[in-house]
Image 1 (spheres, helix red, strand yellow):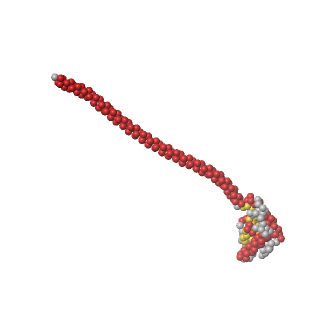
Image 2: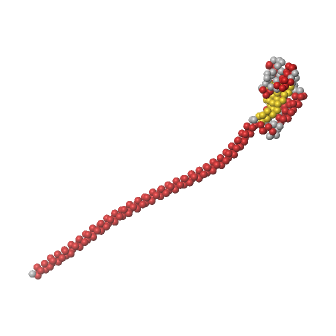
Image 3: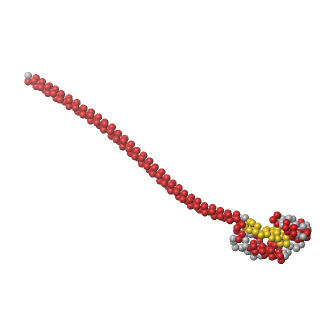
Amino acid sequence: MNQSRNGLILIAAMAVVVSLAAPGCATKKYVSQQINSVNQRVDQTNGKVAWLSNKEQKDVSQMNERIATTDHHVSQLSSAVQSAQGTASRAMQESDANKVQIQANSAELSRVENSMNYQLVEKADVWFAFDKATLTPKAKSELDAIAAKTQMMPRAVIELGGFTDPVGTSNYNLDLSRRRAWAVQRYLIDHNVPARSIHVVGFGKERGPGDMELSSTDMATARGKAESHKLERRVCIRLYGAGALQATETPTTEQ
């Protein structure tokens, strides 16, 4: 009887233990599930944090690269601006220098153009005896005045045109007219007129250019054929000065 009662007590105790143990197991399982869920969330959060951290680092790296690239471009632009300013400054200096040179060239061109503007300053005629190329005292006096005036104009040019009367052949008279012009040329050179300033041409018995023809007044006052022939035995002298330069320099002479 006692054994039977003890068995019942044991069974009852075991039932109590089982009933008490069952809720405990359930609680541990629940807690374990919650912990696993939290761990999963933590893992997910850590993954997101790691992704965000990597992304942030990547973005920061890209930003730094962009900043470095921008700084490089700014540096290049600054260098280009400085170079452009230097080039502009040099260009302005060169422009000023070019202006000065252009002004100097213009002045020189004006001087040259003026020097080429030859004008008739003096004209004269010296006469010769029939079939002669010898200078008379009167002719030498005329040439002295021409030489003196020429020495005052270092850029002067003298044109000498030799003529004869119509008596004789054309070839002979051409040679005679040249000898008369050469005689005048030699006299002027002997009196310090530069040879380079004298231009000689013989016309013989032909009529010369308009500015070397005898004036109508001379021909009208000539008495008959003999007198007009006398006027034709001559050397026509034309003295030209080089514009405003004709009296601006000290005369040069040749011995």
